[in-house]
Length: 305
Image (cartoon, rainbow, N blue to C red; front, side, top):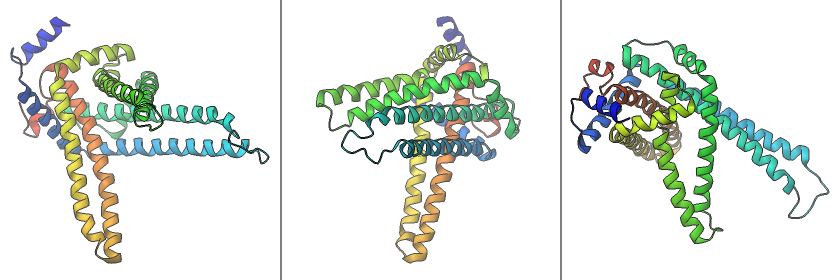
């Protein structure tokens, strides 16, 4: 690992990069992601389809849960313990569909990253089916990673729920809160480049996790800066939407309808846009972590280190 890090340092000019320079480079990665999505807005369709399929899965979970209640209902059953035997069945249903949503998210993120990386590295505009095809080629790894990521994510959410539970003792809430924070940060670091490793390098899940950690150590400042800057830009856009729509909604019935439409459509497009930018930036950061250089596409849009 030390040798590979030294070689990477040579490609960067043989000198270490300071914190502010890392932040600047992370911001440039975000700008590049925005430029790519603006030039190729069909990338947002991947994100949209991910949301649609996830909503379908959630709807199926709700239907299954309600159907289970209907089929297992007993009119003669009364009391607090009535139906308690269904708790595990409901938990199993939601667990399975939670993992399904995780797999769906991983699949479409892989498709975005594959398509974006092709544009970033070669300058070509791949077809919409290209990203899907690349994701399908590593479907077994995606399934495994989706299950692992979903399980760990659910565990972290359980800890977060325990930390905010009024029924839990204060010491347990504090421990759960600290554990969820530490595990969440550690998991984000370890898995930052797992999907690019899977879809671009055809790595296995365990190998991808190991190499993801190594790559993150090289570019930790840029990774964090890009992630934070994307989130801040999305928040600013959402605040702007509220600033535009709120006065309209206070201007009578017509204004209320118009304001709600602007807010709803604006929120949808904003979330789709910046979620896609986040995935594209991940592809850019992966290229940078591997080569120590900006993707070739950056020069075409006037971005350089």
